[in-house]
Length: 161
Image (cartoon, rainbow, N blue to C red):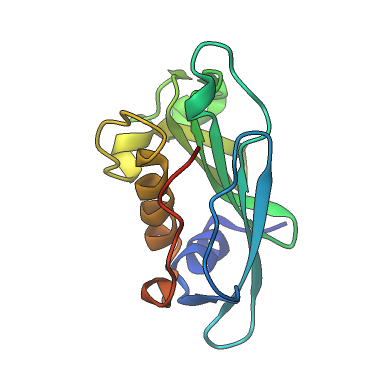
């Protein structure tokens, strides 16, 4: 079992992306997996940009960003997905936690409750998401929150056709 203290450590440890060249943000119906490694070389991570599932209410904004460690979903962002219901026990433990969190929202792993959701602006100031190109900015903020150290080494494709 992984503790919340270890989760916090894994999120905050400085990491480098191991991608070659330009990061081409996936088109609708596709996903991209990026590898990262902690600077101290102790931990391997995978970051997934998922644009596979289409939501009829806002299909151009469908996006899930997931950061994994040993297949454990540490953090994630869902844009234009379903609402998330936090467990009652978690609401009793974390008094600022909402029972129902609409999209967009941010997920973080919790040792007791597994997957908790928070309103996106409470974690990452992503501003208003107005069009698909704003998804690039949400992705950049996600990588910054996940302590990616070499983000400035990359050019991220900025147009999503």
